[in-house]
Image 1: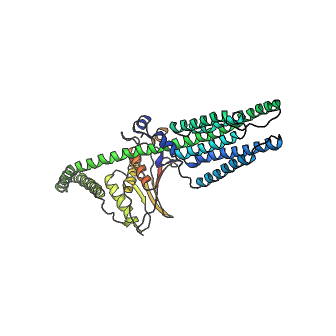
Image 2: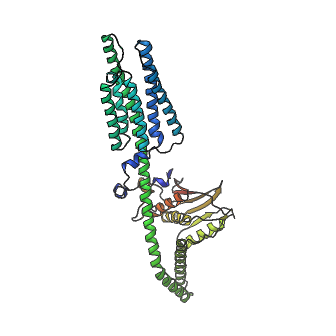
Image 3: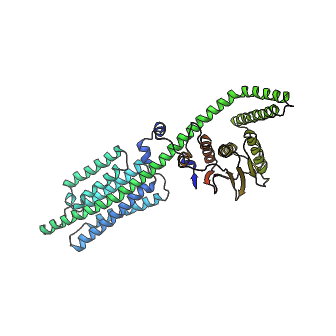
Length: 436
């Protein structure tokens, strides 16, 4: 079974690049979901808080190195409160802006610099972790904000070269060994944090790129369909006069050759076809003028629609099973044409065996149109759902693309399945729309 979703319409790469709207880089990053940005940053911040708390306790009580517990404890407490505020903000899951994310990074960077100040300054082996906010900014923010974070980090590092509280380690050999161990542990932490944040941000950015690509495809398809609708309206306006002439001539010929069994029948068919074309143009003009849609019983509407289609396709043999439902139905704009497109496709591939059925179930309208054509081939599957403006191929050309666009607007769907014994079944699913 192949489900053709409305958003699944694909386009050629050349057309895609030509019609792709330009989206500025700041707009792309500023619309990332908050959980993709702040959620990852919050996880890194909590890990750093836990690491600093464990390190301070380890040095102060494990190695008996005096640590300024009060100021460092206050900084950790402020970082914890800041983390709680970030967690509360994530409850809303609104998009994170560039400035908001940069402010979060600067707050973490400032708190980290203060902790390093109270724990040896640049002699602290963990001072290189101040690069983490810069790395995170580089993969998340606009270049001007990245340079701002890098400048602040560089300024803090320069200050810590001259202003810091040294650690009181009496044994130089022990201090050197602790420094080497700290550098090794710092490398492990840095590698783990970079891998954690970068991989997840890359995944979030790829997901966002895919979403934007889908929106671009949808926009391109809609633009093409609007252009086609404009051309159709112009063509309908130009066809009105010659169609009236054809209808008048066909009527006169049908009356003149009424007694001729061969020519008379053809003239009557020609007159009916001209009347059907005029009716289509009249409906098109009424929709363009925003005319009110008349509600009809559901079974009556289906019968009238199939009758009009049978006039247009007298060569097709149709078997129908209509719902016995007399509730008034307001046909959504474009639904009739969407159904007729599928019927025409079925008649193109299987004019002698077309089955139509409709069922209203649980406030959902199901419409099945089945044929006994050749079914799907790999080429059919590759082309199904494409916005093709060329010659229709195998009965699934422009009509299918227009059907997709119409059903998408009506919150419906189209499912194509291969039938046992050969052929295709197209199911249109649409929410029920009644006057009641």
